[in-house]
Image 1 (cartoon, one colour):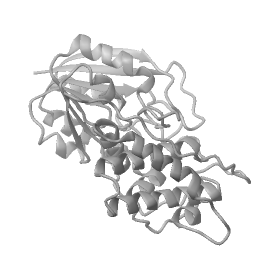
Image 2 (image 1 turned 90 degrees about the vertical axis):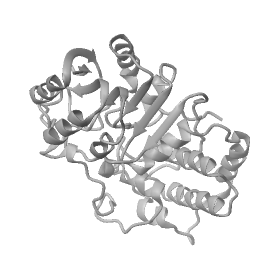
Image 3 (image 1 turned 90 degrees about the horizontal axis):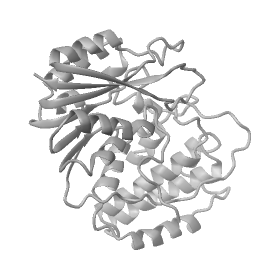
Image 4 (image 1 turned 30 degrees about the vertical axis):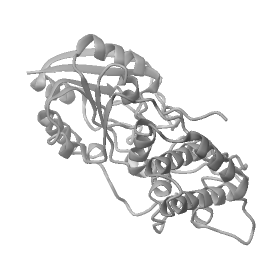
Amino acid sequence: MTRFNIHNRRYVGSKYKISDEIVKLVLENCGGDNFFDVFGGTGIMTEKMIPHVDTLIINDFLYSNEIIYKAFFDSNGVNMKKLNKLADMFNTTYKYNLVQENYCSINFGDKYFSKSDAFTIGEIRQEIDNLYSNSKITVKEFNVLLSSLIYSVDKISNTVGHYDAYRKIEMIDDLFKYQLIEPIETRGKSIQIYREDSNDLVSKIKNIDIAFVDPPYNSRQYSRFYHVLENIAKWDKPELHGVAMKPEPDNMSDYCRIAAGAVFEDLISKLDSKYVVVTYNNTYNSKSNSSRNKIEIEELEGILNKKGLLKKFAIKHNFFNAGKTEFKDHKEFVYVVEAK
């Protein structure tokens, strides 16, 4: 059965398509043995830098992303044959009938997934917890199984790529199939994984060679965009509200608010790094208020100039856009700062 690689998900702001070009710029303009991915997102930049440095540090404030990082980057020694048997069991055991319901089928059935698929997802999620609590799987196996569920869910969800809303269609097909991820070989490397506020974390981590900074720049809160995946990952079954079936607001980022410029400047000033690499896309003149950048490019460049010697590069990029907004001549700017 085909396994998921780390980039096989739909994620707003993903750098997968331009990751090789970014890495090339990093290697040409920076040097060192460690790499700090401050806003990890999909984790693609950390994956791409594994061959080039000895120590990798990755951080993100979403619980689902932390589980994914642990599964892909810290699963050496996991028995994949054992997990293959469990995957086969998941795909044959849980079938919905009219008598049974669970948290997922009640809240997400006939919305983000078909009723049958939602039921299956909920049963598999509960069984993963049962296996772990009964010591049938290790914590590393738990992370792989749960991350595999997240990727399997995201592949078939009835959305345009995020969970701010679901597509309004009458009959949703049964599409769910549980597939495992393919953990990444990291033997010989030091991998540090965090789930902290980035502005707090940069004060604790010292002597960084290369810091990669790709924060959110517009008003779209990732904790709200990916609330279904966060819900399935945490599995604390909160009460949900509204058409989109969201929990109460939690884990909201100041980078998506009017204070974005100030918190970005605070982060950059506190980074103890020889080189700081920042990516920025030119969506500031977007017609959509939610897509419009909270930090103007002039402000961002002014902040980086204070940090040290600044170089600016541009990469053409047809980025992942979940809505209908068109961005003509879209570019991703890559800034490389050699700190004073």
